[in-house]
Image (cartoon, rainbow, N blue to C red; front, side):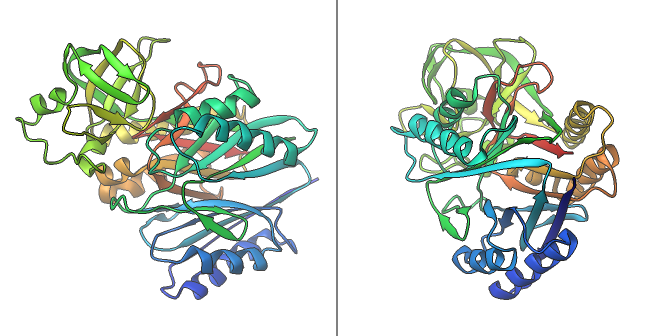
Amino acid sequence: MATHIGVGFSREKNTAAAAREASYLAKTQLKQPAAEIAVIFASTHYNPQEILPIINQSLGNPRAIGCSTGGIILAQGLEKRGVAVLALSSDEIRFGAAVVHEINATNAWAAGTDLARNAVMDFGEHRRQTFILLFDGLLKNNSPLIRGAQEILGKAFPVIGAGSSDNFSFKETRQYFKDKAFNHTATALLLGGAARIGIGSDHGWRPLGKPRLADNTENNIIKTIDGKKASGIYAEYFNQDLKGFSSNQPAALSFLYPLGIRSQKTGEDYILLAPIGMPDNGNIICQGDVPKEAEIHVMIGKKDFCKQAAYNAASQARDALAGVKPKVVIIFESMARQKLLGRETIQEIQIVRDVLGLDVPLIGMCSYGEIAPLKTLESGGEAHIQNGNIVILALA
């Protein structure tokens, strides 16, 4: 019994050349005639409708998922341009892949149930362990999508994942399934069988000032905080200047200063939600649901805090493997962390490698929104949509 892994990357400017090189390198490391599963991340410099058929043909038409990203994470550092491919073949680990299309505010919950149900059907009668969900990072609210998936898989079942991204232009992101790319879509990969799974998640943002009360919320919309217009919490901190927050699209500033929702379960941890809209009526629109009567803060991140969070997440993943060395590490990391860390992102990647193994293949993406349990080792698996996080999957 064996599991084979291959990671390939290319920064070639020509689209076809990049796809060929990345898939060739992945297949060379795989040392198998074909891949069973492929995970593909590509920057928005490339047309995915050209990339995906080449990669799929090269790897023997695997069940492939993936998405666009504003940053590709590799063992050697962060790449802003390129195509990355993870190829897997195993007679120990079982996989199930699925896709749902045309997701919107009214059908997101049903889309989540369909996605999970279809992945389970493709997976078969094996032991299920983790559900990886890649969604359109420009969708307004992804909480119903997650809840729908957990309705099928179980509310304590580990769900992780990320939102497709571009490089803070917030114009268009793409989601990949097999040899095609889509918008307003979610793809998923169910893992199990004889796999060992280690998951870790943390953010490193800290609260500013005194706690406030989100006293009027509706799903992902905060209408009032402490009885006043919700946007006032930012006007207070930024001297009444809200030019860094667009009413039509999120801004980089909102990712750097997300809102922290204090966990109603632990009372200690914070779910980070970045405003993705702030219309003229003073509401704040978030990427995930905000509980009623939630305690809320504006949050601030620092480089040292982010690096410590990376160490914490990697340690959680390592500890969950109970001494077994991972075969591959997959990272989903917020674009906000990339912006905050800048050139020091390589130090964060090195921290993860030091914890999980310098010779372990590593691949990842920078995202608009991350999915993970609030505290992986303590929450019983209930997943949340968050911003500013690093989510690590170690597969053994």
